[in-house]
Image 1 (cartoon, rainbow, N blue to C red):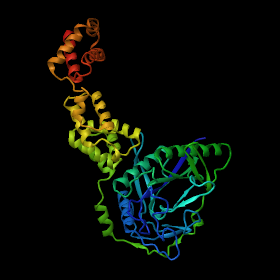
Image 2 (image 1 turned 60 degrees about the horizontal axis):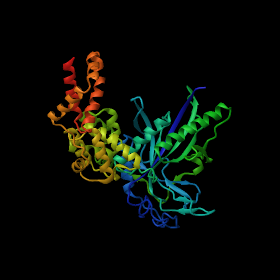
Image 3 (image 1 turned 120 degrees about the vertical axis):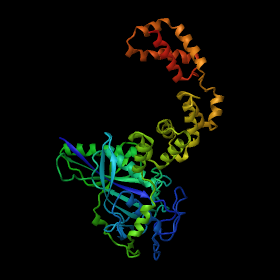
Image 4 (image 1 turned 90 degrees about the horizontal axis):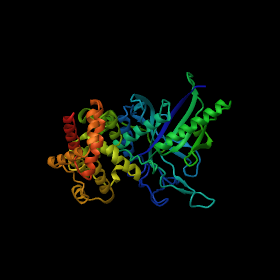
Length: 483
């Protein structure tokens, strides 16, 4: 039987405000439990919320960035449910009148094509607290530091058809919210996480299947794994003649499985009603336009500029523009060495490899854009080879220092003296009569591959210090003259 996967994502973005959505308590990660709370956050009787306008500006900025409808009238509602980390017994959110309406996001697929994903809405809401289990034997502790932290919940249309599409959508959303500065996007700290609604149906069928909601996934890798595992679970159930139940499930990364959390509630189970303590939000077109005009260059715009002005490939441009920090770093490197293509190769290659190995973001790396730009300049002017440059890069990453000083200290400077290189080439040719004859006898289109032997001998004789470009050119010139 042929199945079609249907996926919709609900992405929760923690907004980068200084204080909470409805109180003056500080927002921050890692503080001692219950030290960043007020009477409002604790749900004390008589404590009234005061709306944080900075969160509104950030929500409007997001709406304009994805070309969505920004609603001039929006309303806060109470979403009623009882859970230990929500002392009020309800969550202040938005239901019928969200701040952001219909929009869209274009993602790039693996085959290079673009797919448009609809965004249903984005609404403001407060985060809940956090349950702590590890430090309490047989009990649960509650930390309300996160309570009332401002969130923007972004709900997609069910337009995603594979786990890889879901990851591409999530990455693109991450690029946008970090570029416009409304969130740091730190998934490890919970600044961005998502719920994935997953269902399957027979190909050609229009009716949606019964969905399961995978809760609170906080890494791109786990999003893909969790969706694929859940899809296979549902296929196995249906092909065995069973029925998929609508429920909320958790993804266990250690066991690589999803497991039930609770049956899925419908919206009417939450008994939404307008919050009596908060007035409706009213904004005008001038407010929206002012925020729209203040937006920085968006990822798609930056990517297009990298292609048109710097002659980068669409792939390289897309990788670099996916992170504002990485794109800024790249442009700073180019400003030093004036070589966009070589800079892109190093930033997306060696630099990205070291960042992944050390689990570092661009703002925490030990290598400055100035240092990398100077290193690339030394490749350009022939001072060092590409292999030598990797040695310098490793030293800069691990022990800091100056590019030129490291080159001198490690004896990495290339020999570029024409006379010295020519003497090495002549010596290798004189000592390799058998290989020279094979070169002469070979067809013209085969000789290029045979140069590798002579290159290796010259580089060995020079202890790797000869300029490879000059060696290659001289070898070809002298060997071809013998043919």
